[in-house]
Image (cartoon, rainbow, N blue to C red; front, side, top):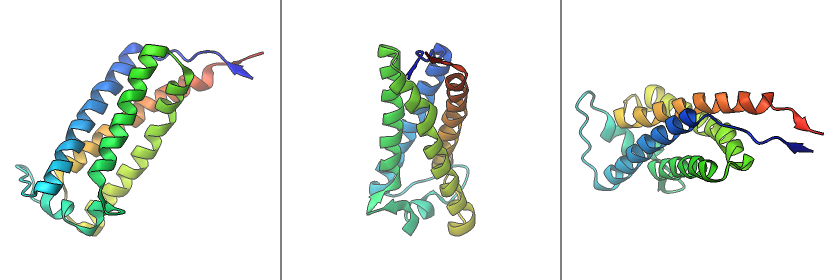
Length: 150
């Protein structure tokens, strides 16, 4: 069974690119601050506590590095779709952000309930991934409306 090409609105793609760049910049900043230390939050204290908690790493790797990889993957997928219009990249943009969103929810839970400190930079990353997820829902709805070719 073949599917018609998915046509993603260029403004939707532009928004995803901007949000992925924002998230990438934030994740790079958090990675640097994890290794350098001494994070100052002007609005809240808590960034240092979150980044130095036992929840700040997975398999010995700072979570911010996973964030860098995630945002790069989204960024390159959006750019690849712009260049090729291939459905595989539209599928990635429609489905992968759901994992980033769910993981962000888990990390917000850890900050609010377990660690009991809020890192404003971590929340910025969560906001970026949430907005990308919302845009991915639009792509998913477009994908579902396209009938298969006979």
